[in-house]
Length: 174
Image 1 (cartoon, rainbow, N blue to C red):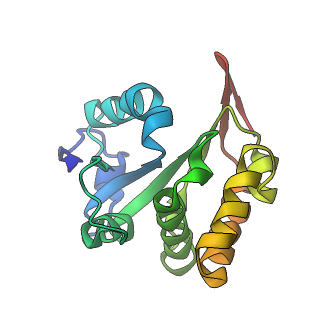
Image 2 (image 1 turned 45 degrees about the horizontal axis):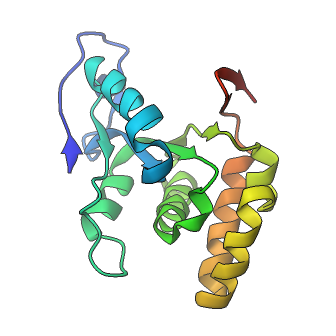
């Protein structure tokens, strides 16, 4: 588990606003092979440097085919989630499981979601088109339809949120 705690000296930091039941200020959800060594690494280091208690999973957290209970707790006990949605994001059922949990926490606990879209269009995320289409065809064959619908709904809703879009050295807010 990569986590670090630290209080910021700024009274407006996320740490000072965090309810006592939260364990993390920020949970980062991402597809490891796409963004771990680049964007996510930089984001995580910047958050920690600014005294923000951030959580990003390590590759050895997964136990078999089930999402690790400590990962679910980290999502539930975070004030903010940052899904970093990249081209191969939808290939990972674990990314989708996490995103569905993030969306549930947003609905039930008003958890803030700040999406980042890297080399993908938010409209493709919303509608599971482009690089999201084939993985979802495969998910439909492999997994329960209720699970797949939950993942699709989470992508649709998160794709509708205002976020940051990064493409080849350009960044925009959509």
